[in-house]
Amino acid sequence: MSRRKPRPRTPAPAPALTADTPCPCGLDAAYGACCGRFHAGTGATAPTAELLMRSRYSAFVAGDAAYLLRTWAPETRPGTLELDPGMRWTGLEIEATTDGTAFHQRGTVTFTARYVHAGEPGSLREHSRFTRHDGAWVYVDGDFPDA
Ligand SMILES: [Zn+2]
Image (cartoon, rainbow, N blue to C red; front, side, top):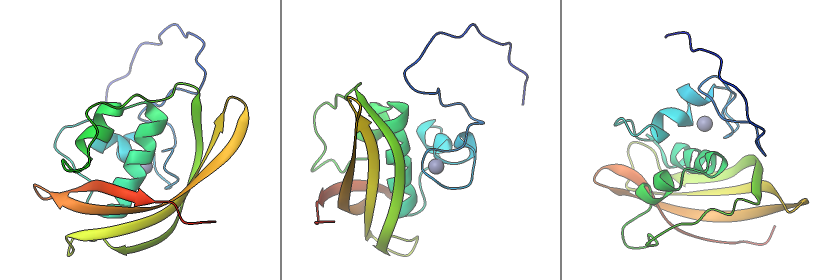
């Protein structure tokens, strides 16, 4: 751990994510020790489908499209991914999970993600499917059950 020099701040639309800020995924942990260690790409991968889901949500918050693409199953992965800069994600709630542990090859996660878009609050409810690719959990696809 080294002390960093304070840097001049430029106004940003959302608070910047640092290793010490609370992780946006909702777990009681700092970003650097939670989803940030998966985003860093240093070899750590999410051990469960739920943690992958949380880290993908945090990647939306962080604007990390590269992480979203590399945790997407090759069969369903889009060629490119443009994140909407007008979208501000404000919370994640995991509602249910099936399988998706260290002992499974597949799993599902049902969640609600809240956001503000162009000043309007909204929410997205998704039942997502996950599988393993080269041993690591990846997102396959999802459907959108009624709330
Ligand atoms: Zn997290």
